[in-house]
Image 1 (tube, rainbow, N blue to C red):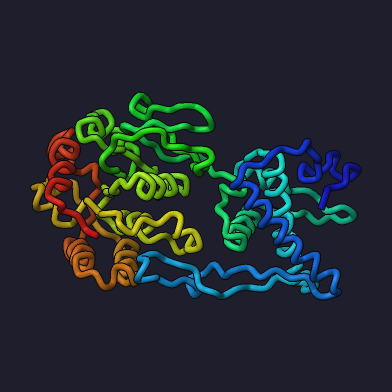
Image 2: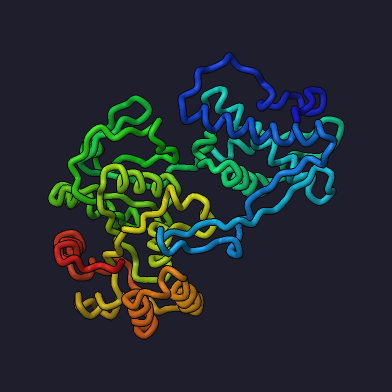
Length: 387
C-alpha cells in the first residue's frame, strides 16, 4: 500500500523502516495479535482461497445486557469482508492498512492521534487515482473495527484521542516516568490523557476515600476552588460532558485497582442519565470495551428530580423539556439495565411529570458554594443516591 514517490512526491510513512526497538510486554501481546491477524490472510491466499476478514458486528442488534456482570456486552455476530467481493474490497484493504499503521507505531514505540493515523495512512494507491481514505470519517470506523477484532483498546494500538477531562486530589501518579502530585496542580488540575494504561500511568500513592465525578468542568472548578477534595479526602474528576475513553479508563482503574467508590454528580436531564448509564454499564457503541471501562458499582448522587422542591429552588432555574428530551427520557427508561429498577423508573417519571430539567449549576441560585458545602456532603453522608 505504499504510495508512489513519483505520483505523490513522498513515500507513505507506513513503509518507512526504523531501528528495532525493544517492546514492553503489553506491546508484545498486541504486536503478536496484529501479526496473527495478517497471517490468517496470508494463509488463505497460499491455499488459493478468497482472503477474508470476520469483523464483529458493532450494532444494537448484536449488543446484550449481561445481568450477572451488569454490563453491556457484544454478541457473536460478525460481518465478513472478502478481498474478491467488489463491494467489500476497499474496506478489506482499509482494515489491513490500519493494522499495518498500528504495527508500525508499535514497532517504533510512537503514538499518534486518530487524525494523525488518518494522515499517516492516506495516500494515492500506486498506478491508480484511488485514495486509501477519502475522509477521516471513513477511517475512524475501521480503527474501531480493528479494536474489536483484536480485542485491544485503541490506546493499545498506540492511537489516542484529544484530552478532555481533569482530576485533582490526594494521589501521586507516575506519568511516562514523571511524578505528578494531583494535589499540587493548581486551578486547572491534572489533565487526564487519552492513554492511561498501566505501562504509562502508575499509581504511586493515594489517600483518597472515594471519587466524585462531575459532568462539566464549570462545576468541577467550583469544587476545586472550594477545596472539596481536600476537606473530604477524595478525588475530583470531570469528563467535559460525555466522558472520553481516557477518563472512563482512568475511573475504571482507580475504582478496581484502588477500590475507590465512584459517585456521579450530573445534570437532571436525559443526557445526565445517559452519561451515568455509560459510566455504569458501558456504551452501545463501545460494548466490546465494557469489561475494561464500565463501573457497575457507580452511584448517581444527583441532580435528582425531587431536588427542585427539596432544595427549594427558584422557578427561574427550570428548563422546559422539549420533544427530543421527552423521547430520549423514554428511551433511557426502556434500557434493560434501568427497566427493572423502580427507583430509576420513578426518577425519570418525576422529571417527565415536572415537565422541566435542571442543571447542577442551578444550585448556585441557593448560594455560590451550596453544591460543595451542603448538597454533595449531605447526599454522601446520607447514602442518598440512585444505583
